Structures are given as structure tokens and as C-alpha cells.
Image (tube, helix red, strand yellow):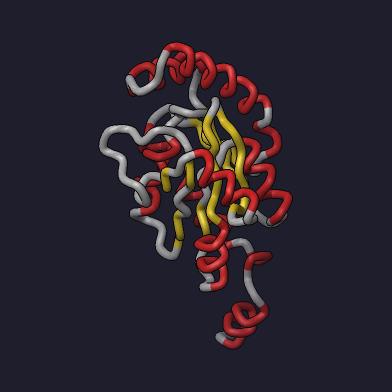
Length: 195
């Protein structure tokens, strides 16, 4: 799951997870400052730059990137454990990280969350009241770049109306789970035995 900062990824994810069993959400790590109401290990794992760079050096991250001055990345161990346990894994990534994951896991399903318009995205960013004007401008510039990469994704969900965006996102997950190419030989054998 990728999309510009402020597009509503967190909100869509939280709502969709309530209705999607066996979906593991991988909490990302970051060096950005903790916002009011956030807790380490809940929204993000918050690390200082030195600790994060040690994680990079130790190959403890599935992917990572620097985004508007802060590092973001996915701790590899929880993802590998969830996959080994047969769970689907949801990663919330920025564009560079999504490309890294697609390279490592070519079968990864890529979903782009898009704003209805750039002006609406700007309104949402300003409404959060968490960033300086400089950071908002950096986020908007980055959003323009990310939107140009939309053709690299398997699906696009436009977050115009939240209920529709959540429904569309959930439908993508359900449709992908139903694709025959994702079935194992054991799944196919069990299914055919019923007939």
C-alpha cells in the first residue's frame, strides 16, 4: 500500500483490517519525531538516526528509504514470521520502499492510494496541523512524483469518499485471495477432492 502523505492510508488500513481476517499489518520504523498520541510500537517504531542506520547496516530491514528528511523502513523479522505462518502481510510504504519490496517479492500486490485532487491532498495535510510549511511543500512535491508512478501499481484506490475507498481496498484484498495462482498444491487438492 503506497500513497502520498496525507492521502488517508492509515485511515483506510485501520478500517479495512477490522473486516479482513488473517491479514498481518507490519508496523514500520522511522526516525521522524513522535506526534501527540502516538506510541512506540503502535503507529511506528520510533528510533534515532544512529539506531536506524545500525539496522540498515545489520540488514534488519526489508526495505527503507529517506523521505522528507527522515528514515522510514520495514523491520524484516516480523514480516518473515507472518509469511512463514501463512498470513497475508500488509505493508504501508512510500514509493522507494514499494519498489524495493516488489524487487524482493515479485508476487507482491501493489496498491496505490490516490487523492481525488492535489488541492484536496493539500487541504488534508494542512488540516493535520503537524507539519511546518516547508515540510508540507516537500510532501506535496513528493506527492506529485509518486502520482506519476501510478502505472507501476496493480491497483489504484482513489480516496475521495472514505467508505468507498475502504470498500475498494478490501475488495482488492479479497479478489487477490481468490485468485487461483495464490493457491498451493494442497489447497487445490483439497478443493478438487470435494468434487
